[in-house]
View (cartoon, rainbow, N blue to C red):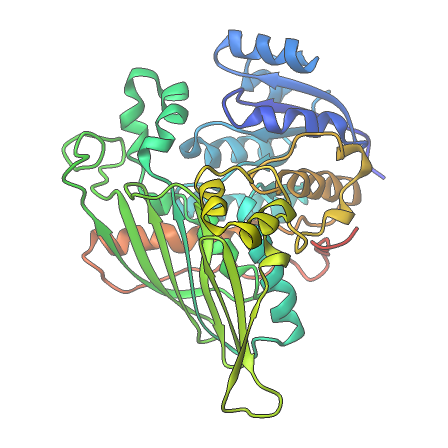
Length: 418
């Protein structure tokens, strides 16, 4: 058994307050530190959560006490910071995305493989109820051979402005113009995680140039990425012959649900979702030319929302649009595997935070791989990076590099049980 974890939370922005209490509550964690470029933020965290402050990332990496880091900085910084941490011998929990270049993802994979340090990416899409449900049903053979799926992450820039302002200040628009497909894993993970070992082979992608937001998106210096697209869509050819459509939209008249699977079809069954209701269709046992459609909403939505759907659907839609079930879990999620110490700790992103922190801590303690290990998340992230290049090239089909499966002697923790 490894020594207790002493972890530094890097970045005291809008997201990390959900996670500091979880790391503090975990029995594997002995000490939690916080680090931020803005001292006042770190001081607020120290006061609110009773944690220690460490002034710089360089001090974190040089520390002989701290053996793990959790990175909650701006999305374009993750790759480089993870690489530095692994080289310094630290175990790493990283918020999404893994990195914004294929080269950095390959380097992270190399370092993890060589050092056997724990790396886990906090992909909330992996533990959302539909993803959990589809993993179980696909493993049972319910869907047969996968044929086609659709997923999207609709996050309008108006809903993201506060987050970018909090870290980017007056220059927030330069950071906000990051290509949507540099942040694809909320969508890709929900489909690909249902089919372990399956990966993207080729992509073709197109981007939408928004004439109303040329203050953020364009190629005349509006952003740091020379990115003209506010929205991007791709088709993926999978290694199992299936096809997936993924959309990442940053200028769209939609609030919630923001991360969801619309369709997931096999040759034996099909799943569909629309705003609040979830359906499963399959061939009838007594007549293989006819299908039965089952409403599986009660497995995939929180109990409070299901009750409202059955009572007053219009009111339920208002609750969905307001994202009021952000903190609630659904029966399809494996809530019984979460440590009892988490029970009184706030959750988020439809109840996914508890699973993600538990995965990282269990992987650290056991030396096994987190379900969202580098080999898994590379398959969620790399297709988007290649797809952005396809969109810039006007929809040119492009091959997607695959980093393969984890080493055969490195066991992956189960996602649905302890």
